[in-house]
Length: 571
Image (cartoon, rainbow, N blue to C red):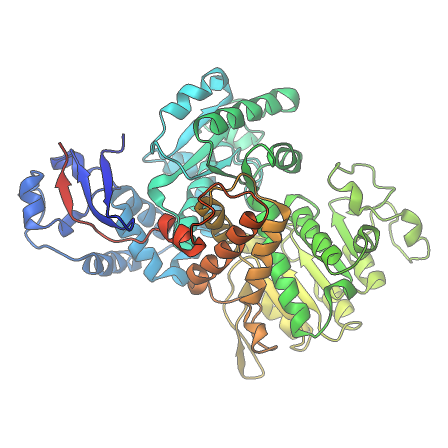
């Protein structure tokens, strides 16, 4: 039990909250605590008189005080810690504050600052949130899920912490990512934070620093793999689908060897979604569509190089291939227009370590027979750019500075308006900075980045840099799926989300505008995306709500806003 019940009227609107908690028990519950906003009547009824300062405040007054305290923090990590402590104290106030300052605070609670926090997860641990399911407890998953708070769950973000952002295996620290993702779902999509659950699947770690760290809180063991790993994941999914059949299950930061396989295996058994592959792919494709529209070109005519062929790179490529086929290309023709480069160079038929999900992107090595190459065993990014002459260059390699001046100038020499998207994060992992890209291309480049960057001044004019942040995509996708209780997340539902997001691009009104809106607009954008997802699900017969229910009404029912309600004592 969470200790409270939401009371609604006949229209579904919350009128008040009933709880049996009182005194310090009430003040210690972050989902119920209102601090100095408890009224005189509530203080008397719930035995709070004398436990709080005399003044009764509004939520807005509290948020103003918290913002003043936030500004006293001198480092981004300090700000992250402050906001998380506020979340542990008063969840409503946390969301009120961060929603009022979304552009400023999203990079603190999410990327890029969350990466630093994840690396320090064990040393900074204060209060547990969510569920930790370790491999050592693999025979007790049902019992662990039964211990969850809340009882009713619309959304789970689960990770095994193997591929966190650009910093790799962080073991149990991956929980920080699950928690951050759920905050973004609420801030940008309006998902009810009282009905979400972060989950850390603790399958060990291959990070030697964590294994040797006496402070490390996870299962101190090398990562399990193979059949043992697959059986553990299967047991988790089985338990979730049995106990929480209508839950939207979001996989996050799963390693490249497992991500595609898990998604493919369970996508028809539950409503599952992979943030790294589908979320990143959706917003990246929306950016590409906006860029091609701005340049008055067709997607099917583009030559696209993707530097980085892990889960993010393949996820983006998969979305582009699907879009090209929707626009008339055959599967073979679509694959021929993409060149993917991994740690061992261009993916070709001669590549020695192709993973199953990379194989469709491997070009016949004979295509490169007439290329002048320094190393035929490892065909470099520069070699590919020189010979392919791409219109679009996308980076998801986590190799900071990989897009060098030479490479970019080589690209720009053959393309009138190069579309360049260094998407790796945190910021130091970005393949290039927007300032360099603009100056190297003499202002011609159309840019979207993964990390936030300030405006760039060029020839006396400020240029706003679009952040291809998957916060534009996954909150709306989740909101739509939850609103109609989707059985599965289909490819057409994902395309509907991408198409809806591309319709929100400022380039639709001004070809010279940034590719994506401001992050402060994500709430309205998520609503637009959610409706498109829900409508497509209904068309495909994947919606389990009343077929007569208006979709906007269905979305309203599951949308949450940070506000205080009157409290009454439950019997």
